[in-house]
Image 1 (tube, protein in one colour):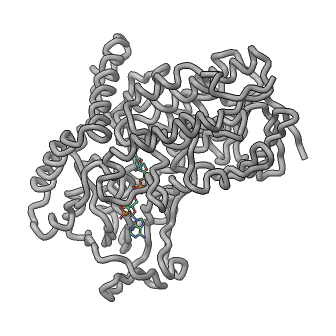
Image 2: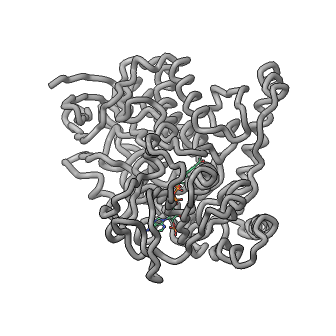
Image 3: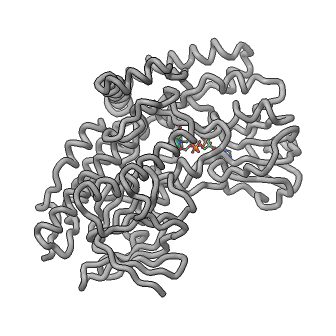
Length: 487
Ligand code: N01
């Protein structure tokens, strides 16, 4: 068994892990490692490579503030381009030598005596580090629905985040289960290829027009030559999205206006009234993620697409049977059914002070201080931890803010020669009481839907109920007085 000692250990080499690595290096830290379970970096942008995959936040905002890219080819960059961008960042900032691929963390154990985390991995390796920065992703565990007979199906089936590229869809009868953010990108991309597409919809989403398109060579050259023009564009995008936060969290009247636009968009695009009825959402806009697409409604109206709103009764060896007793025979099933988010923020066994497990500490729903520190788990920092997700803007903004905060903590630990920092229980409690109070007023709690934002008991443990600049302000300074410091 190999043993390795580091000052910091980062779990995951997606956007968050790469950001943490870059900022550690920039701050002069050199004794760290990034463990990545996959055979390539990129996280969610490596895994979600299904046909049609692209960002639904503009790339000029969905990218690092310190590494703005003048060359995005489209307003909403496609998956491969985003993956290339992450690779470019790792390369440019010299991170590749720090990344250990094919290494999946299975267990973290805190040694209080030493003030060190022991990190056990699937390949038998054990690492030791004073601080662990968990960047394992908020949406990295694909959720397969618990449908009776699911494993009896004799055809091909796979999840949207584990696309089977060796399976040729041409001429096949294919089911897509789900009509969320992934499905509305997949459906238009595959419907021209398949013989028939059976689209199983449980809840119709709110869809807005996507103001997308190629970014002209002229504009790209301008962004290269005049960086302030690029920054100005990013600034405009930023404030446009912050306005949406106002609607989601404070002023639902704004959403009424947006829902009217969405309803008009549906009416303009879908002429058949019966079909339109099926596509009309019945919950308040914003309760689930608002989707952007110009090609979903046209795809749904293609002759070879059948929108099935009858609920699924079972999956059997030849296909799917719906509650009305109709059997839909299929060659393949695509599960565009989302991820374990509220229930699975951290996917490995974590043992903090006194051997307490994180799962046990979170049995009533995950919570942390600023989505980053959890009482009883010293020197463990999370990026995209509880209640840091966004319904309205770019996650990269939150990632950068959290990484900044963590760096402040790590610098303090180094400068003051601290063995450990552990957020005070009362700090975490007060923060979460305030957070849940704010959440109770948002559309996510009152919008009349069931979403992946909530646990089974309805507690929202995923979203930040405020503007991103409020989060940035709160994470600007590491407030040592809110932590128990051990020297
Ligand atoms: O997953 P989802 P997703 N029977 O949970 C349905 C991000 N993302 O992968 O609404 C039938 O949104 C479920 O139905 P219902 C983004 O944050 C970003 O699409 O629960 N249907 C729903 O329609 C997003 O929010 C990009 O009634 C079942 C669908 O499956 C998040 O990922 C792109 C079912 C799941 O939708 C997740 O999106 C893609 C069942 N038993 C995703 N179980 C970007 O562009 C579930 N469903 C950045």
